[in-house]
Amino acid sequence: MKKEIAVIGLGRFGGSIVMELSAMNVDVLVIDTDEARVNEYQDYYSDGIIGDSTDEMMLKSIGINNYDNVIVAIGDNIQASILTTLILKDLGVNKVTAKAQNSYHGKVLEKIGADIVVHPERDMGRRIAHRLISSSVVEYLEVSSNHSIIEYSANIKLENKRINDLNLREKFGISIIAINRDNDIIVSPDPQISILAGDILILIGSDKQINNFENFMERLK
Image (cartoon, rainbow, N blue to C red; front, side, top):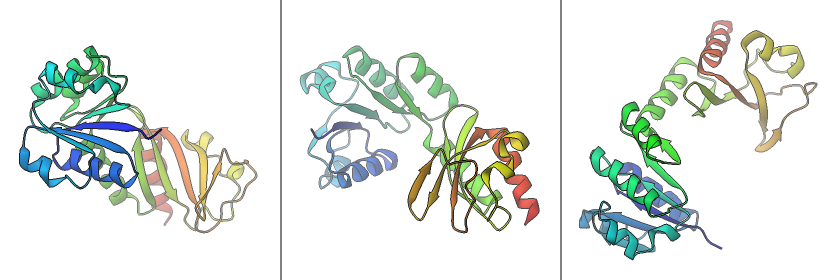
């Protein structure tokens, strides 16, 4: 069965999600108080509603609890974001993903039951910062408040070395959980595998450990 996802709030964040989901052939319901925004994305969703997501009766009438995931992408109105999230969980929505404006907002969303809380502005800032510091960082993904995963493009200092010989866990406390080699993902690679030119290492560790690794590798260049 095709997944059905609802997106509440069609700002830049919500709109980009709607377009991406549409490209993935997902049935999307959008809800926004602004008619112009709903019309703007009409080519990307299956159903659009101009309405207030803090209206519990409206959400109940459209069967919001039947959706696989409801994304609360409301922009600057933190009160509406919190109230909407609370109503969705009260109505029995299985999975609510909510956008947080700041760390305090995020904590409140977690406490009232949001299943996933995203910090797009903060996370994008971290991605940019890591790419500025290290030209080898391809991608950066926060997995908890102090642990992250990075995609690290193997440079000449890593090429032709076996994973076991690098001692990344011993030296930095980080682990190679996979290798992207010519778009083929090697999961839990054998420690005896040698790293080749063009490999992208998928590393996990605490933010401090990853920073130490990045800084060390940059000094070797």
